[in-house]
Image: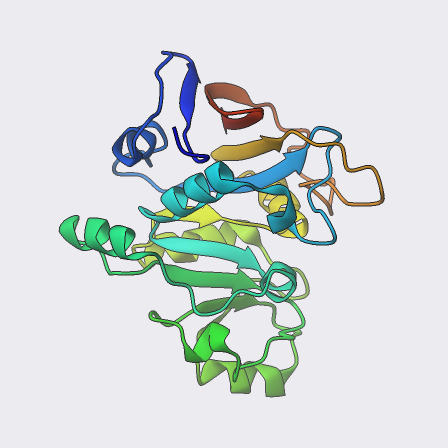
Amino acid sequence: MSDASIDLVWPDPASDLDDSDLLALTAFPVARTWLRANFIASLDGAATRDGLSGGLGDAADRRVFALLRRPADVVLVGAGTLRDEGYDGLRVDDASIGWRMAAGMPPHPTLATVSRSLHLDPASPLFTEAPARPIVYTVASAPHDRREALAAVADVVTVGETDADLRRLRDDLAARGLHRIHAEGGPHVFGALLAAGVVDALHLTLAPSLEAGDAGRIVRGTAAGPLPADARLASVLRSGDELLLHYLL
């Protein structure tokens, strides 16, 4: 077995799942809007190593990360995570392109982000190399000059006065026909999504490490709204000492 070999531990144990098995296990529901989040955390709850979530992952986590993007209409990422994790134009791999086109989908998902300050560079590869025009959600109080600059390379949408209304964001995505929403962070956006009551599922990789230090958790920010959120376990995957957990919220 390869380093990225993944077994299903629960509910129906199976060994060395192929990509089709994993896609079926994590499929979006049909004919409804669905927002799921994808995170990784250490055993002691750290969401990053050396400031980046990617430092916690291994080959199996990266495999599932790519497969979770594959059927998504849109990938939602907070502006801080875009900067910190070094996102470029959002593209999926060749296998995913073939899968999507066979399913009648565009070759790549749309990238959406949310930012009150609009502290984003319109000349960055995030926009200039994007295969689909990104969407930037912001607030009415955002700087006008930054709004105009970003409007040249992205759809800029207001979803609040001084704070972004994440329910309005989800509704706007659905109105655009982007019903399969895959969120990749960061913790502040995840906290706001939970507070708005619009998260349907969480895919959480539990990395077999203890990080200590001052790394944050996968949820930060407001405690307003329906928090804490209860979760129901849907499946457990395992790759070596790593667990990949799927919860319904």
